[in-house]
Length: 155
Image 1 (cartoon, one colour):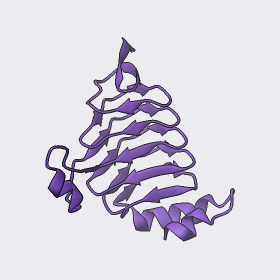
Image 2 (cartoon, helix red, strand yellow):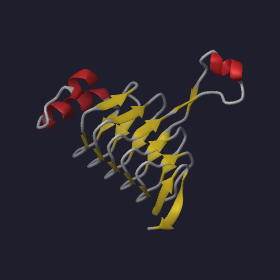
Image 3 (cartoon, rainbow, N blue to C red):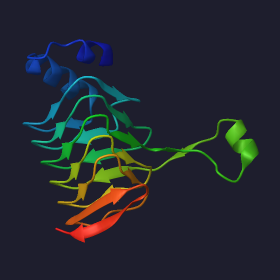
């Protein structure tokens, strides 16, 4: 399905919508995702109404990824839900992993190249600066940026 989605023409919004409605758990009215889009499964991703995901996004949905309404996600963003053992080197070598969900609140904006790590919630109306790595929850109505992302100011 991803191959078909990513092969659509620039003006083929109808075909992209049809594919995403079948692939994703939820694809809200007015939502739009541009190719190239990559995900692990699709069935654990919900994208709310009027949300926009720009080119080259990667949603590693080994756990639930819930994107609210009116969200803007910049190009080359990565939402990553998989965790590997840090302290147990043998488990990591054996390929063990666990997952943690990601939640993006309504009307949030993730700038280009943002990476959201497992278990993170980005609050409503929050803005994450381009290139940031979000390793902990970001509250509602703040601008956060950096690596790791930290609150810069309230909005």
